[in-house]
Amino acid sequence: MKEAISTKILCISFAVFLFVSSETSVKSMAFKLFDAHCHLQDQRVLEKAPQLIETAVGAGVVYMAVDGITEKDWHLVQEMSEGYESVIPNFGLHPWFVEGRSPSWFDTLKQLFEANPSAAVGEIGLDKSSLAKGVDFGQQVEVFKKQLQLAKELKRPASVHCLEAFPELLQIMKEMGHFPSGVILHSFNGAAEVVPQLTKLGSYFSFSGHLIPLQEDEARKIVKAVPLDRILLETDSPDAMPTNPIYFVPGNATLNQPANVQSILIYVASLLEMNTEELAEISYNNTVRVFSFRGSKIASKP
Ligand SMILES: *[C@@H]1O[C@H](CO)[C@@H](O)[C@H](O)[C@H]1NC(C)=O
Ligand SMILES: *[C@@H]1O[C@H](CO)[C@@H](O)[C@H](O)[C@H]1NC(C)=O
Ligand SMILES: [Zn+2]
Image 1 (cartoon, helix red, strand yellow):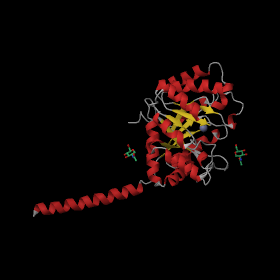
Image 2 (image 1 turned 90 degrees about the vertical axis):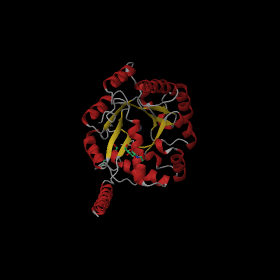
Image 3 (image 1 turned 90 degrees about the horizontal axis):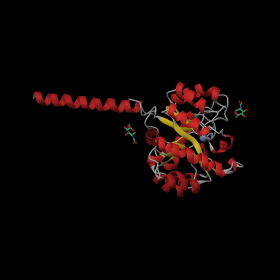
Image 4 (image 1 turned 60 degrees about the horizontal axis):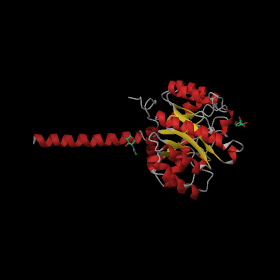
């Protein structure tokens, strides 16, 4: 008799526990996001950066990777990282700016990585599109190889810009071997056909507002070619404003911002015919995994 009562009490308390737990999970439904690539150091938004970071964090963007593009902006990225726990610093020389590099650019870069164990490599890359018209491709290759090799040696991920240069990218990556710390194909809109080879070499594929202007069928083909455990989301802000945005830079509707990574999430989830929260969790976990290299802000979290 006594036993039966205590069993009954146990059952009731278990039911209450289940009820409370499900209530809790409903309340904590707001998902976490990670903007895998943006440029808050850009002169167009630098002054507003504190406000943009606050807006992003308020919208569930726990981390944002801020990518430097030239020797001139690396110190801005470093300062922002020192000021905000949510900012993951990335240093790199972007392909559009290789010709303006100083003789000491690579030494400066190496010193920056020594001084900043939490920094990843980026933005680096190869560009044969009209956007890089006039920039010597030979120099792009030389600068890119040095930085990609450095990322490999430092065991840190590299954020790569690649436009109309996938055969060259594949060739270089194959020569260097597998990238266990990850290579992030940022604002990826390459052909679905290159995805398997890049995946095998250790790549992740990060989608941004640059995906939105593509035909929906084409975008769907690209997104579906990527294994779920390699999908990342980014804004590339202040560029690549997603159409149908949820948030805008206050006072300037032409500039994108990290909080808009939610718009990218919603679009990519719709292409994958997947639940938004599920993709949020998968992509957040993927990005945390890539940016959890030794010395990173995320890896040093208890
Ligand atoms: C918004 O930003 C763009 C790009 O920097 C600039 O050309 C434009 O004048 C800005 N508009 C306003 C209203 O500030
Ligand atoms: C994401 O990571 C969390 C924490 O490690 C884990 O509990 C959860 O199951 C993961 N979700 C997915 C979809 O992998
Ligand atoms: Zn970029």
